[in-house]
Length: 318
Image 1 (tube, helix red, strand yellow):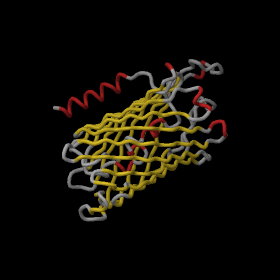
Image 2 (cartoon, one colour):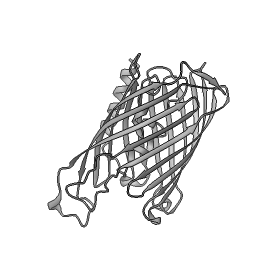
Image 3 (tube, helix red, strand yellow):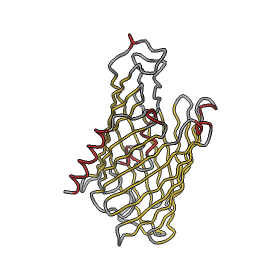
Image 4 (cartoon, rainbow, N blue to C red):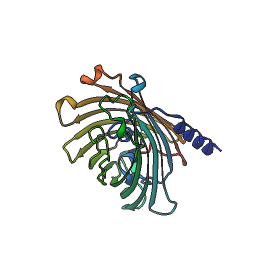
């Protein structure tokens, strides 16, 4: 009953949000709550099923960034096959995206059972994932002074394919993925639509056990596309779990630097975040604080997550 109520609430939220903001890659900003968003091989990497709803709310008025996504991932019982998917809604006053993704993943266990090392218990495993993604782009001439109304179309369907590899070895974890693998050139609005280029993403980290149920996890995340844009993110996370009470919490501080084509377009962002687990439910919050010139034009963004695991997890899912 609780599962059905939770699913109905999440689906209601996604259909009620009508004003959301688009960025070049809006969904990838929220990967801290769900690594599956940047690497399809994460689907089913742990032997549990998760539903996560993430929202990003801007504080810059009606044109501020707002994004919502609902994701699901699971591992087939008694098999090494993982499945995942998400749907999202994301727009600006001029562009609107509605899209989704479906993932097939295969996991190769490389150890029998879990080995105990410094309070961290994780199996060694190599995972591969492949996703088919599609989104519908629509647009309006509102606010475009140079826009010719005669060019206005209903929208375009954009297909895509994503691929990922993920490896975990007890406390260590690392992933590599590629997205925007199908080149897309819009039929119109060539000067206004920011084309998404082939992008490679790397992440890695190590969960260091410092006491029973307590870990510190440094990690990095790096994005690069074929036209020379780069993004580097450095993270430090503290996690505390209590298996007896089936509860826990975590806190993380992240620094993100975007190295775009010109210095004026570069952004530096500080992201403090916190999260808590109560049995099968997880809650999380993050705040994006711009540190450079953009700080004078934006009040930052707030990110929220509400998650549900079908089995009570022993630790926070990645």
